[in-house]
Length: 126
Image (cartoon, rainbow, N blue to C red; front, side, top):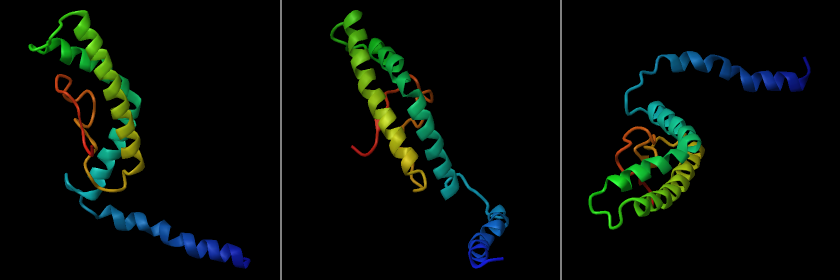
């Protein structure tokens, strides 16, 4: 074995045994692993399904009782609001995907667009 091969083996050998040490860690609903996993999965899902904010917001605006203009005006307002929320949800998905290793809650409430389809989404951080 040359020096470079020994060096690579010396550096990578601890990683061969690290899985055994992690197997005994008990995860709880608020553990670092669970929060990171939720943030990663919601990041992927929000990037892929952010467009679902269009029908969600059309539905929400159409069901509001205090809408000034019913019908097509409510539809167009829902499309505008849905477009803005789509951009926000996809942006928050990218942010969550990039920062999933920091164990915080996802930056969108609800975390997935389909969780509570009749409730308006809230975007954390701004």
